[in-house]
Image (tube, rainbow, N blue to C red; front, side, top):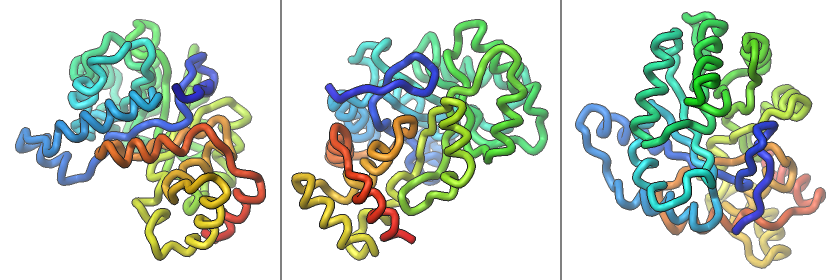
Length: 283
């Protein structure tokens, strides 16, 4: 069992990394319009492999068309040990629609409650106060246990936080990796100060961070040799864990071998010097 750390101020402890279930636009198109989910069993097996490795944080969304896949994957495991996160799309941000979306997600996931319910993107057309009123109602009903946001910049994050009357924002989800560190300038300090957990999607930069011709290959090799032959993916994911105790990378879970490899990013740490060298290699 891998070590688990607090997920922000939720009181729940999760693995240092999670698993994402966004596959690609083709998958979404096929699942939504053609009702065909390709390589379903492989994806279910990948998620189960991650849980067996101690990963208990799983992220999905109504847009991804993978909530039913998560339901199948988690069936053999203890519900209370898992932290299941999903998202609602901006077109469903009205009070009534967000309630209905949550009910649909609960049904697809086969759950009585969602650990983390996230607003997928900011809405340009809906007042955030109305949306947050619905989110707080879902909290009061016990349908969701925590409120999260995704793809909200600092100012929109502050506005979302101020719109809540009884509860607080538990997390935000952003595009973040050692090669894409824009949010370190403003959002990361804010999240640290307010004990908001950060979910990092594209933590491997669409695979760019682990390609053989990566500019950082020399540094990656050096770090690998010092830590028992860790792979580029393991090093890129461990960067989050070595630097932060409130940022959780969520690489995609679609292949058992990749998930098992990714799990090897947990349980060890780079030195400050190694972190600095790695970051500089991507400047």
